[in-house]
Image 1 (cartoon, each protein chain N blue to C red):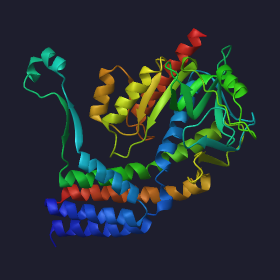
Image 2: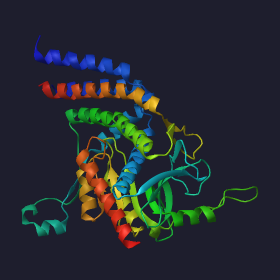
Image 3: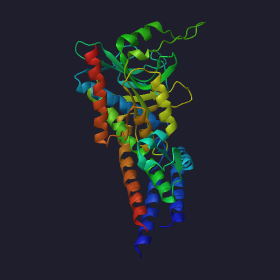
Image 4: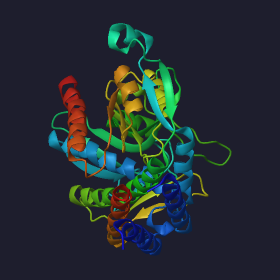
Length: 237
Length: 150
């Protein structure tokens, strides 16, 4: 049997065995971007930890949760629809920070933007929770979102199957950052794209690519960038 | 291996993925194949700065995928998605290590009622890990085999 036929047979038998293992339960279509956002939150918290912060977790009722609940779609920080979980980040003698997943913030123009991961001062988060009001009979809900000026660090997460890291998304990010004056806003993708990176570099935006657990070099570099944001916070406040 | 062999293999793998519930992934890859590989050529200002690039065009361009590249794109995309299992494990272990409580589950809820929540537990994630690793190995075998066959 020729080498070519042997390999073709190997391909066919691999395909058959693959068919037996693949089920939709393995990874639902909505799952990868959410898991990626959660993973990026852990990298932000690792960076805070490396800068000597104490990390803790709370839900919106100020309890320590055993089931961590995150948003799968953009929401308001004070939303009581689910007992959403956030992390608290406490540096010695500094204002306490909170890290949230999928919240809206108010840009310089007053437009609401979604931050996939956002670190803000707890004082600002508490103001939003205090001034917001869930819907009541005869009264619609009223939500207050954090001001962009109170952002310490923000991340735009892009999980991409190799297929679709395209330029439009990078251009959207550039538009978003122009409405957020904070310097530590990062475009983080799970894959790489030369054209996207070229565009973001040219526009002097923070970006990192190939962020998956196996990419030790890139993950370390991203954590270092987050550490810089926390160091800047510590020297400013 | 000829172009038609790569095309045939692409179709076979796409069918396997659709039957396994990954039609959404095949559709995304197919859309990307239609768009092509995007690249940005230097701007006019860039060209002026570098005389070597004088003849280059400017703007955003798309190059079509070859049949072999289309197959590789499908394999690598599926492998990338399956490898989120590693991220799930990192999530659970990090929250376990840094939380005062033992974490029972991580849940993602959309405020759109029709979307089912994503629930990660140690049991589910560990259960998927073995299968995810086997699939990754097979996809690597496929990639190697398609590169070896001439």
